[in-house]
Image (tube, rainbow, N blue to C red; front, side):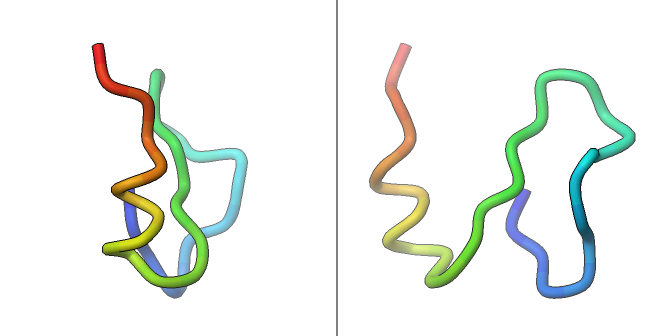
Length: 32
């Protein structure tokens, strides 16, 4: 989840809050 207004803890299970640049943060996510 990329958001400028949400804060952890997120209300959704298995969710990760991305901080900073959304594109760069997405590239750092592990792949399954």
